Every structure is written in structure tokens, then in C-alpha cells.
Length: 366
Image (cartoon, rainbow, N blue to C red; front, side, top):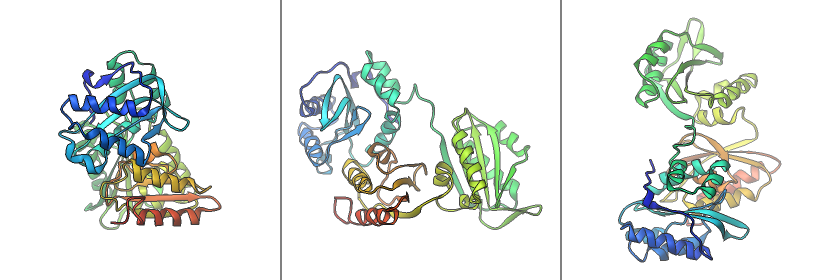
């Protein structure tokens, strides 16, 4: 979880160029004891490789892997530029977040930041904020609704449907979504049969999220098969899009896909269409700005609509043509990315993406 103090927020800054902005942030990171003085060179080198502008008026300058040895402690500095800075051609940044990271923990920071900053309203508030607390609350998500969470419980050794539900409820409780009363209420309820072996249970909870539990062996409830249990924990209405997708999956006869490896992506995206492939990221430091930008560039070279989900992350499917969304997936080395392309050049798009990933996305194959 990103933590910020008021001294990390630089309000109302005014500089001429992005190089000046980077030098300002690097100087503050140095003053705070987070980095050695030479770290600014790494930040400028990273920018020369590829601009770190994310979109929505936000840039995230950070160092290269070659300058990690200059990082003493992971941390950030945030500078607000109300008048804006041309960060890249035609792209104006109003907030720049300088990141110092000792290892891959910066991917977690990026993921949290990009999730919050993906909100256009939040980006506008960051630009117009006149106090540090407002910026802190926006960046740390204190003013934003909690995102829908996703958990899996695969191959659970259940003897019947109720034990599978108990396993899902215990998983939600251990994640802090609810308490013992929630578990008791679930066990006293009757799950709904959606079809194709998929069941749905619902509970009021402190956090909105979904648990997908699958049994280690074939089960039945009466004469009905049990291949997957979906547990919906609802704290607000943010789960409604997934409920709509469930209805679409049922209508399309694709509920059985929820028992597969890309179940959470299906819950996010709805019925399958187009072509799909799954690729494993080989970059040692995951999808940071440079390889992420290369992936987005490849995707933008095709007309097809291309969605990608991190099967080893949240499972949320996002546009592969948005750098903010791609970096926000928090992809590390070894993570599996599920791509779905729909359009006239879908086959070529998936082939091109697969080749680019195998080649290291601009960092060379490892």
C-alpha cells in the first residue's frame, strides 16, 4: 500500500521542461535520503528510452535498472504543475510522480497509482488541488470507491456443494471481506444454480469481491453437477457489471468457461468472442514503462479490439492499447497474460503480440 506524507507533496510547481521537472523530483528524492545524487541520470536515461507519460495528465518518471544500486529506500515524490508541462509531443502532464525503487516492488506502486489515476475526475482534482491532503487522499485511494476484488480457490477437496461453499466463504473471510456472521449466513442460504455446473452464492460484506471455487473432483447436488461455485460478496453496487456478464455468459451458453484458467477474465469481459492466446512474460523486471510501452505500440498497430488480462493478478481484462491500463496490471516476470482479439486482423494481432513478447518487448529475449 502506497503511503504518503505531506512533505512528499510539492504543490504549485512551475518549471519550463520535463527535464527540469525530473531534476526537481530527483533532487527531492535525494534530499529525502531515498537515492544517491546520480539517480537523476537514470531517470533521464529512462525518459530517453521511452517517455513515462501515462495519460490523464499523469507522468511517472523513474530510473533504469542500471541505476537501482543508487536507491537507498523505495519511495516517491509527487510534484504538481498546475500550468502543465509538455511531457511528450502533444501530451501535457499536470502531476509527475518520481519513483525510486530498489527492486520490483515499484510495480505494486505503479499498479496502485495507475488504478487511481485512471479516473479522469481524480486526475482533474489532482491538477486543481490546493492542499497536500487532497492529493494524498486521491493517490492513496482514500477518496475513491474500493475496486472489486477477485480470489480463486482451485481444486478444493470438497465432498459436496456445501463444503465447496464453505471453502469459498472461508477464503473471503481470510481476505478480510467479511466476518464469521457472513460465513454463517452463507451456510444457511441456498446457492442458485446458474447452469452448466456453475452455482452462485451471495452475501453482504465489507468489501465487494468475487471468489471462484472449483472442486478437486466431480460433485453433484441432487441431480445437478457442481463444477464451480461463485461467491459474490457485496458492499455496494460495483459488482453489477459482473452480474450482467454472468447473464450474458448464461445466454451464450458459456458458463462452463468459468471453471477454466481464464475464469476471472471471462467474468470481467463477458461472453467470449474473437480469438484468444496466452503468453508468459519473460522480462526479468516485468512490464515496467519500457516493455509496457512496446506491448501497447504493437497492439496499436492492429485494427482489432485487443483485451488483456493478467491471469496471475486480478484477472481483470483491460485494453491492450492503453499504457496506463497495461502497467496497472502489475505484471511481473513469469506472469501469464491472456489476450483476446476481435476484428479482421485478430489472428495477425495475436501472432504479432506473441512474437514481441517472445523477443523481450524491446529488452531482448532472456
